[in-house]
Length: 284
Ligand SMILES: Cc1cc2nc3c(=O)[nH]c(=O)nc-3n(C[C@H](O)[C@H](O)[C@H](O)COP(=O)(O)OP(=O)(O)OC[C@H]3O[C@@H](n4cnc5c(N)ncnc54)[C@H](O)[C@@H]3O)c2cc1C
Image (cartoon, rainbow, N blue to C red; front, top):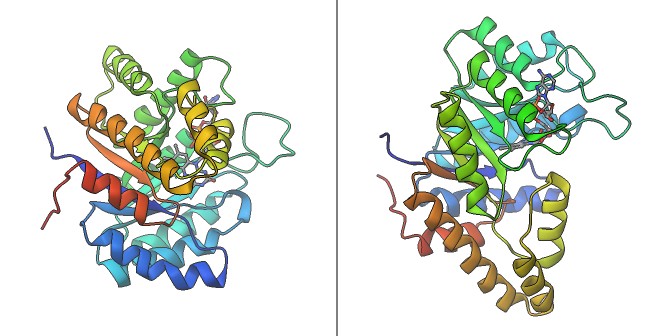
């Protein structure tokens, strides 16, 4: 088995203050030498240029592989082709290929523009760049919120694999069994690409509820109740969240997860504490 992959996700800073803080965050996170940093990409225009700038910042401050997310909702082939060329020129070798969230006004599940679903984007990248890019796609162990049922959503995941995805990163979840169930379904379907769990540290009651509601992930009742009770004691809530997420990561790694992808939300502390708790090594 390949050695596990550990990656840290960033988003392009939205204010001058957060832009000023980002280099220090990247330096702190880079100290443990993750396999790569990925940078999100706003769907439908928001923050799209920020992805490229943040990628350059990662390269400058960390010297670690920088991986852009690329969303295709509302986009044209020409526009996606230009993004791919620019990334290739900047030395990017891996892409997280996504549809992106639909605009709130969307009338149908298919995205507007020349690409409707992420499998079409994967096909386009393969058609235009062959095997040059390593392509990661999104996986939803608890089902994508717009899918009609789990089997249809799984079939759609399979389309992305068949189109040429090399690996997948999951949506956040707090119940390890949903990941193992998803991996069982992959094994039965003959899907062997690495599916790396997406890990969201818990740092607050309101944001944990909001993140889970937004992406359709189950926040187990006992965790929600404990967070609600601790919401006015920031330090105690932080320690409780660390304990919950450390145990989740331990369970996943002990049972064969091929790595972890941390949603850092541009903050180093929670991810670094998890890293320490998990006693993950610092690669050379
Ligand atoms: C690891 C990770 C990173 C992310 N990064 C970003 C980011 O940087 N920017 C951002 O805006 N969002 C990001 N997202 C959120 C993501 O864009 C949304 O979840 C979006 O709604 C779906 O994107 P997708 O690539 O999974 O879409 P798809 O795989 O295209 O799936 C979208 C929906 O359509 C259905 N579907 C898929 N293919 C077909 C088909 N061929 N026919 C019919 N139905 C189909 C699926 O079942 C699903 O319900 C990320 C999510 C994850 C898990």
